[in-house]
Length: 101
Length: 165
Image (spheres, rainbow over the protein chains, first blue to last red):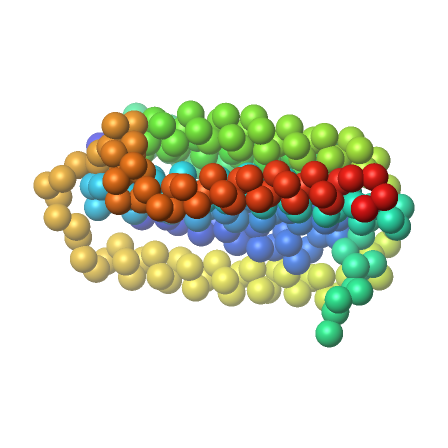
């Protein structure tokens, strides 16, 4: 009666792809950041599904670490975005080509 | 029953993800992302990961999304993507690239699905007890490193958002 785990992994593939599309398609760095969160979530879902399939808790432990890293990443990233906005009064990734090769 | 739940929640998750990517207003995007995170929390519940479902709601839907909404409010939303996109042709590469990536992922998933069936003896140990035991034995060092990481992030954010930095 249970849903097979591969469906969860397929759903996580869909969500991950949507995250990638969002990162490439959008111009607002905040939306890009949210798409990155979407990708992290998709990978978390895949990890939990695999952990469920193989019957151990290590996948969930890994998800715990991913959550902690995501929290740190969001805090630092948003601080950087706010600082850039303060310096330039504009917010578009096209303006941020300072470090581009 | 389980299938029906999965289909409904998965459809909601995909729809909200599409909304996040498509909507122009970042506030709408943030609200769509909250819906998506809630759907993923429900999926965690159906996978027997109660602790992670709670952590997902608290950490993601609570803390991280509040931070996002706060930043959007600070940065005056909606002004950035109003004009025509000067690099539209390049941005539209996202669609074929996403399609290729998606096909690759689906091929991998189907290969995994058709190959090794796992040993169906041990059923999930998703309880808080199992996770806590792992965190404080096998993963003790990464766990401590996580606290250092969060401390470093906190100090870095304070340094970055200082006036006149």
